[in-house]
Length: 94
Image (cartoon, rainbow, N blue to C red; front, side):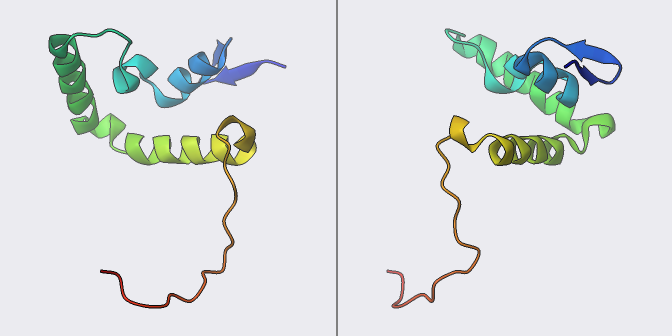
């Protein structure tokens, strides 16, 4: 089965996420061994992208994408579903 996003074929999970978000994953996650200067430059570029009106919904899109992946593949995250009904709280938080 082919995964096509925006007319392009994604060959891996990371390519699918990159095509869905419109930016490389490394921009948001960083890369192993990056220096403080590289990290600062990456975060600066990320801030610039988030300030662009074309990417105004990116944070919400990312949360939706993450929620969908967790819902569809909970075994990847060892997630235990919580009860929809909250138990009554007793006592007062200190």
